[in-house]
Length: 327
Ligand code: GLV
Image 1 (cartoon, protein in one colour):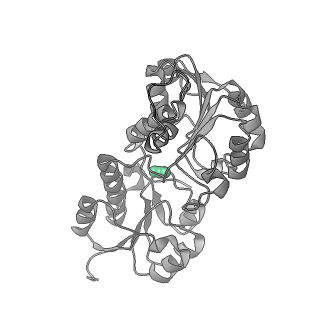
Image 2 (cartoon, rainbow, N blue to C red):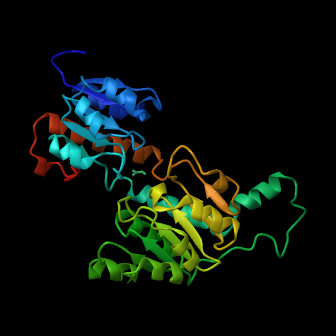
Image 3 (cartoon, rainbow, N blue to C red):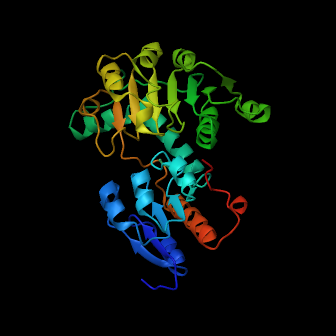
């Protein structure tokens, strides 16, 4: 490492343009895919680095930050930052950044894609054809749920929840939402959205429930057997937030017992593990955490994280760095 420049660890390969951008300014080390998902590896190697640009799969714990005695900033390559112990970072004077806004539209598109695929049984229908079962047009084959006039219940009406709601409105859906706080009247009006204070009541009234909230103590296992029992039997569940918002055992049971009609899951509680009972559940789409995976968005995510690092290492005032998290 060149001693005149700061040292940055990027925990795994990200778009090359972002790495080049940081190399103009610092000595950059890029880890191997998956290597720094191990807390032990991170603890052993973090010490020389002034900044960490990490993936959401990397556990940035108290032990990691204490081992990183030169760390000034941890920038997550994600909007969700439940993998980072933000309190400890604050107490150690380490800044934390995330990447809001830049992934909103990609995630809104993706949630709509999951809803269309799930409600029209595209996965099963395609498999049926590939298995050689398509013998001609069938009047009763693969009948799904039409979206017009159906209720979409969104839990977590932040940027991504609202982006999904706007798309669903264009398909004629009614929007219900549960959130820490009510939207301002203009945003609510633009979506014709109805606030529901009680998440269980939202479960009862929704034909589709979509999880778009951060993972916090309040949202951990928010979708449990009680919630699932309150959903109508024809209802669908979509999760692009964090796996642990759902009690996966309860969900697998509900799907196998046909207590709800299907689920599209982009995230899992113990990624990359998927609960074995979800793997065999009917009408269930299981995807490898790809809601923000477009070329443009992943580059924008990287640039936003990289710019927060450059700003902090250059001593810029925190108030001028919009994507810093305050503990
Ligand atoms: C992806 O899950 C993110 O939080 O950006």
